[in-house]
Length: 335
Ligand code: 5GP
Ligand code: MN
Image 1 (cartoon, rainbow, N blue to C red):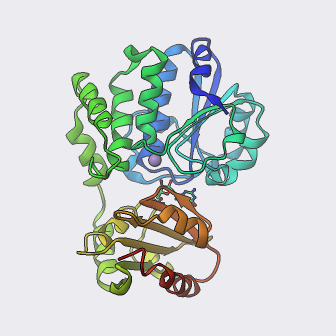
Image 2 (spheres, rainbow, N blue to C red):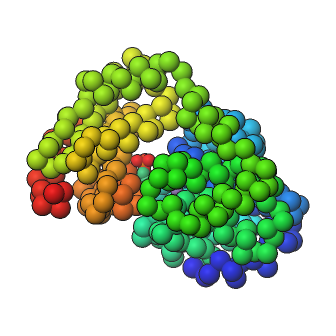
Image 3 (tube, rainbow, N blue to C red):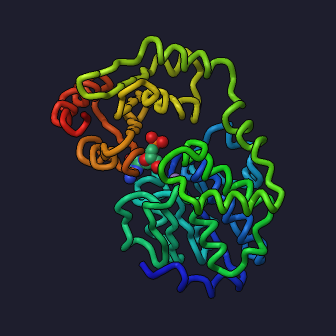
């Protein structure tokens, strides 16, 4: 993978560009792809954002989201666009399997592949150009750096700023996590000077749910939480029945995991959701417990030091049992 600066000369001549991200895009994945989209279209490129799957409704207010293709919902159309692409931008993922059914089409594509990402241990050999920086708060901040370094900062308009703000806000827990460096606040100051209205973005993302989602949260906190004080760990699981009963859709369970770390002394929060195709884990930690390594080692996953995901093809019961077994080896690390 060559340095991203080597790619800059390609920005100015119109091309067919596809931008993609990880499956079930979150605020950072959707924000970074759309932020880059609004930047690139100003050069006359033909740009299409292709998401590997659907996404949460709370992202549907974002500028440009109506033009995003859902690969699972329309494979042929998306494939035809990918076939024509000169450049494919891969944002907010480190390993191609995170694009689910788009993995093989991306590998097969002859387009130049550009990675912009902040997850640990990227598959660098799969990309022609790119930047991987695990110290960055978000992929949105990296897209901002990309734009600034390209020399076209005058192309940061309100649409670009709105999309990039969304991802940096969600990936930093609203500017709270240690990844929120001075550079993040400087970037936000720049957006504010351009006229960004941040309050409506917070409201659109965090205060825009249906009643069932709040009741589901109550149910999970009351009935599906177990605190393993010996390991300073809080564990939660969500059954298929829970998902059905509360009409849970993509994105409705996002944020649940952060409640676990609100308990005094808890350093490790883990939530397992019994999805159709797999048991999906979300791991979060405070301080020096490395959930990226934990997820990689035990649950076919990965991510960041303090936030990672994983999966299991065992039953929910088996998966929880396994978690309780493996956690015993971490008693010291979790003190
Ligand atoms: P979440 O718990 O929100 O699904 O994921 C937490 C973080 O870990 C996110 O940055 C997400 O992109 C990443 N992540 C989630 N699942 C996986 C996985 O299976 N593999 C890798 N490498 N990263 C993941
Ligand atoms: Mn991210």
